[in-house]
Image (cartoon, rainbow, N blue to C red; front, side, top):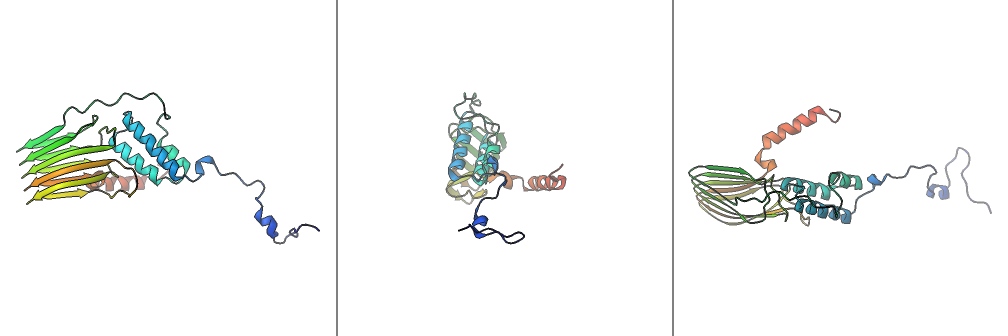
Length: 230
């Protein structure tokens, strides 16, 4: 008995339609969909790179967020393309952040931290303003703890986009606010823990998006105007 076949110019048989078409191009490896395990592997590689001093706190946070959002293996490869493989000789860590206490008494204190944070930070404002920028810091553990006190003054802590913030403490005739994007539950993103006491003062934790919304809007507008071929 002969096998069913299609007639010239007719519709292919059911059997032929189930068989792979000859000459069909294979899917490139970088276009294969990424798995959850592969995303977690990249996140761990980023954490190790941070411990080795290869990534700042901001870079660690942004790349971790990108890893969890990756769709294909090619997307994951782009995130780690400039990092050595696991087991490579470790880079020299960033210099230790010696100054861990920041205060402003009837004055201003603005610090952009770039050293390695491996201990708790403290910020005190008495009728003054304190601004701590953590975006350029080296954070090997992926966690930062800060004790903040504001007495008739203001303290602002700037963190990278995508970081998780845990705020505790109290406010007496003052205010404690967190203005960051909500982290996706279940993802291992960097964490900033703040214990804040505000007495007739304000304590604010903001990410880059909320710290400079106008600048970000202008940058986005300019990038869109240039287009992909600029």
